[in-house]
Length: 127
Image (cartoon, rainbow, N blue to C red; front, side, top):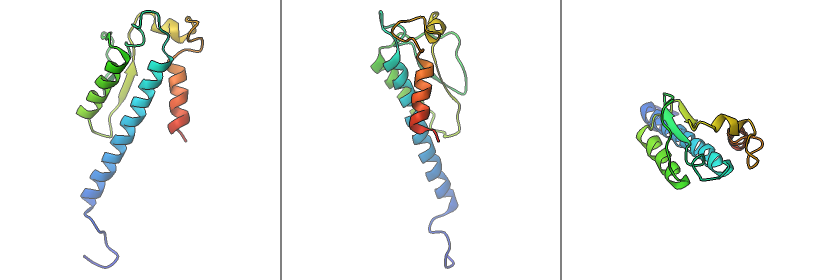
């Protein structure tokens, strides 16, 4: 290799950067999901366990009934199965009263849940 040249092939460098981007993206998504779970109002726990991830798609039918720990494990599994750093990850709930909760219907979450999670995630990772 010529003086002042690369110490590794560019292909390896690209894979390393993609791996770092994927890891940080997954960390951000899991933090956002954690914020949703933490800030979800609890009556019977259905709303807290209804948040889920989709990759490069939105699911308008699914209403999971996970507990908080199961939601996090399922999200980790989905992210691990889709390691590409260039994917669209959607965190959502389809529970029928989710929009009402977001609009301040719950005394436990007067400012919503997704808006709080978004602001906290942006504060932590945004620039």
